Amino acid sequence: MGLHVVGITWRQVHRGYTELMSTHVDDEEFVVLQVCADHLAAEVLANFLRAHGMSALVRNFSPLPGLEQGAEVWVPRRLLHRARWLNAMPSPTEAELDALASGHMPESGERSA
Image 1 (cartoon, rainbow, N blue to C red):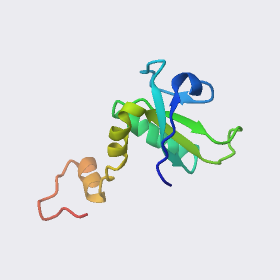
Image 2 (cartoon, rainbow, N blue to C red):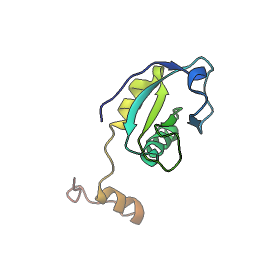
Image 3 (cartoon, rainbow, N blue to C red):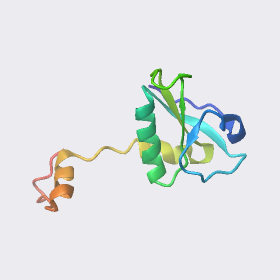
């Protein structure tokens, strides 16, 4: 899925969009960061961005709940570069997840990609 940039103001998107983080200005301009295959994937990305201090909106393409036709994740235009950077961060490796779970940090030679 490519990155689409579409300009729209908060007043234009207020109905039909969800926002769990209410840090916005009424005339803040939001843009589409990514189109996701379903609502759950869009919410995961939006919550990841929210956990990093960004406002994020999710809009379903389907007018009915449960009808998966994709969803968009919207972010403030002024933070689009940061959102792209956060979205490009690699996921932790299995070794890193094991180290976090066990508290045992791997030796320098043990790290696997």
